[in-house]
Image (cartoon, rainbow, N blue to C red; front, side, top):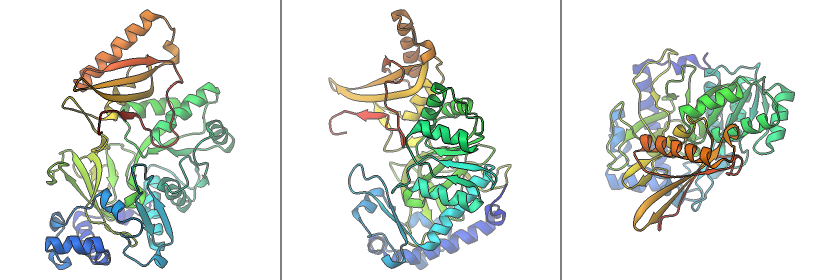
Amino acid sequence: MFWNQKIETLTPAELSDLQLKRLKKTLESVQNVEFYQKQLKSAGIKPRDIRTLDDVSRLPFTRKQDLRDGYPFGFFAVPLREVVRIHTTSGTTGKPTVVGYTRNDLATWADLIARNMTMVGVTEDDVFQNMVNYGMFTGGLGFHYGAEAIGATVIPSATGNTRRQIEMINDFGVTVIHCTPSYAMHLAEVAEEMDSPLESLRIGLFGAEPWSDSMRTELEKRLGVTAYDSYGLSELFGPGVAFECQEREGLHIWHDCYLVEIIDPVTGEVCGDGERGELVVTPLAKEAMPLLRYRTGDITMLMEDGCICGRAKKIARITGRSDDMLVIRGINVFPSQIEHVLLQIAEVGSQFMVYVDRINHLDEMTIDVEINREYFSGELADLSRIQKKVVKELRDTLELRTTVRLVEPGTLPRFEGKAKRVIDRRNGL
């Protein structure tokens, strides 16, 4: 299924021509941003110097801190009167990142979401429940307008009040849901407690945080949906940057709107196809806030070209963020790896918390894991057996010794938005 088959299936030559044309237009637009004026002047680069797509590697990187330093409107390339909407990131570590949209930007964004949803089989006959925040977070309104563009019936339920969410799914015959994967697990848990089968559901759209294939299997089993991965960042419109097609072997990134590179996060050198590194994106169709080589911090790789669906290149599913990666005694650990291990152990649930401490100059990782209700007997022998099993499986996968504490079902935090499963208590970290 296609929303815009001509654009979604451009030939490599057609796509390259369009990307270069849009890259040159973006370079002209950023001349209105003081930050880029200084950066390009310092690098000795003028827009006319960029003659091929490979020349993008000559341009300076843009980092999240640069956007924070430009708070509030330092990265807008158009007058404020042309900005019809503003979103921001959470700003939990300082000033938030401010993102502006022109009317054309909003139309482009809705079109990208419509492409994604159509690609996985959402149509005007579907009832779509959008269970994400509708405030400054981009996920709510982004998916809302994309679903309306398709003609689906939209229920803007937002976050919270899980029992009411479940009632709406059943009362309104909801067929498609959108939320974070961690909230979807909570939704399944509460539905089971209510003995309320969600029989109308057929598609689940999940994103905003890395999640494993094991969680996909668990969500599909418990919710009765086909689960698809959604990827986006507020700085790049929001959700809609990349999405799985029905093959579910990587995420199609919309190359007509985004020029993509994978770099070594330490050296900044460009990686080849199949080499995992940090995703760097230059948006090609943004008016209010064009960016050059934005370092997303997300870890992925470019996959081989070609897909049965006929669309362009894909990126692998996000395995984590470079700034979420934990370095424990010299070993790199992502929360998604821990999740993957735990979801394959029947005796424990999907809920966990990770604590990192420095004890006697050594890094120590402790993981609190909820026991699955079906296996919770309270018998010490059973608890000891389960604990040893979890420790072994984590050690075999992470190649790292961890401390595992088993806790009663329902005692760890549940998250309506992005899950915050790591608390790093090392000094200065």
